Length: 89
Length: 194
Image (cartoon, rainbow over all chains, first blue to last red; front, side, top):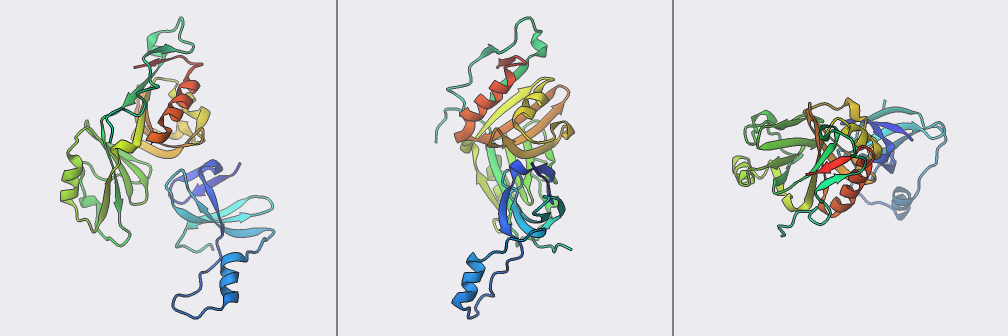
């Protein structure tokens, strides 16, 4: 069981959270011509890294906010959590 | 809309569980709190209003994990720019709506969508620990938290440290299940339904 530090509520059990996928994906710019290949990449293609990874998590049973988590996918160690509009350093 | 309380069919009066040969003051007391006005206040992201100027029944909107209260009204922090108000003043929501701009806040009456269970007694922390992953002992009077109890989303309002008293509220549709979970957790200590 992970103990995750929500930027708003502090340390809480993993039970209160939902995993939200890769936190590094950027949506293509609005009002730009986007190729089908780029859309496919944005919607479907994800890496499965071994080691440090920036992820999105949602505090579903708490403050209901999305935030970023830098986690090691091997050891599950969490290095940093930030609000969604902040960058992981 | 119905006037039947959410726990009307399950909350039976009496003593239950391991209550024999125990002082009544040692038993956990469980009651349903109903007929309150409950509404949610959410500040819009594009509003730059100074929150310290906002007053609800004479109370300021509390900061993270805190609550503010008077004899009629309790305001709980739910999340950033999001609060839950419980009040016995049924006309309070109209007054609040009139006192703020509807471009700053969304105010929603959810009185009929919540169920509230009040627990009182020295052992209520032990009851909550059975189904809730929070570090319950670290919470003090005047604080609140959203969490889960046996998988049901709840809001815990830590009302008083002496005597220990909390209110657990959840969605009305989960009310009977939540009541069953909590009373089941109370059985080993003995409890009195009031």
